[in-house]
Length: 418
Image (cartoon, rainbow, N blue to C red; front, side, top):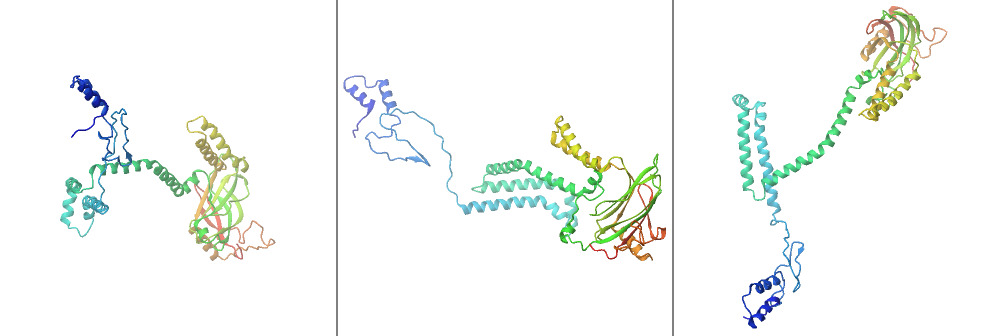
């Protein structure tokens, strides 16, 4: 069937008709190259092939336009997968992994169970290495067979999924470790709060609130007023010279109380003072501390400035060190706080627990001495004198640390209103 020729092919035909060489290679190659890539047919009919692939549309090349070959990469796609079949295979894969885990945990589950026979427990306990190797071979074989038979489960995809999960965990590990470190630091501060307070020199509670106060709505009904009478302290550690001593008393959330200073004291001095404090008999976390201290030349105002001065000095020193001003200032504040609380050296001290306080209260309530009153007439006794005589029969002798004794009396106050 005859057909029309275009371009250089038509020129070649006309040249052959005029008597030139029909088999000239240059003419034929030029005719072929000039017709490559043309999207129209020889008869100028409309193309019937595909016009695109996915979202990419093939370009329409006009007649006579020069063309070239450009490789274009298209992604490989799979045929649509049945969702129910894929879900079944994933559930089966999860079951296979769970079975493999149970195979490895079988010795742990059986050895410590009474239902497991004794001979099997003895046999498996001596051959754990062999059992682990056999379990590894069995698990790898079962997983491999399942992957080979599953139509939509690929070992390569499982490997890269595990790598992706490991990558996500590694990327989040820094943030997780920082959070764990913060929580651990807070837990350590709470657990060792008493030790840290002791290191920093605090002899009383820093936070004057507890869970008991929150639960009771900060009610004062659970407290009762007690009177602590101090008679004398004896057999104290001796210094090189005489000293000026005073007594510091702390109990729970009460503010620290101090007796007057006594001059020219060597190993004993007479205190003869009484102090009224609030006390919860049911709170076993309270502690009564009576400390005999040396009065220093430095006053309380200087002590309050020491933490701030330590922070400023630490910040300046930290600027010249790799730590920086922030950590240097924090270290300086801690050092200044410890220095401020260490002013006024302790000579001796005694710490009474809640149980010991209650025993002394019960002993004082059982003797023949009258109980102290919140409205004691001033003409009967002085403001620093108790309702009893200063004698051994009405006071409890307690040992102090590192040495010394203290005569103390603890009694409930009648008629006291919180």
